[in-house]
Image (cartoon, rainbow, N blue to C red; front, side, top):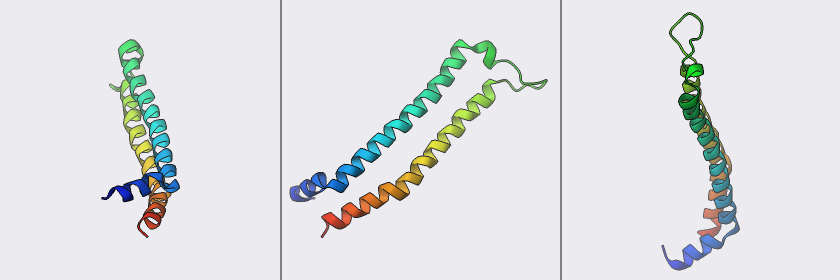
Length: 102
């Protein structure tokens, strides 16, 4: 890719908007994941009696559904990101391609 093309892409308003939207959204989702993951680690480390308390008469403890929630949350926020990427981010990227490759 030549320097002129790089310059046109990096200064195009669609690229700037795309970069800002993806970066900001990515940081929000990263922060949410960190809170959930490290929250789970804190619960395991400092609240062992709670996490090892059995639910009912079986062998399942509170740590198991909380751990399952962490996994489900990861899948959920991945799906949320993919949905937004496939709609908003792809549209911005297509707009950028059309404008720059004229």
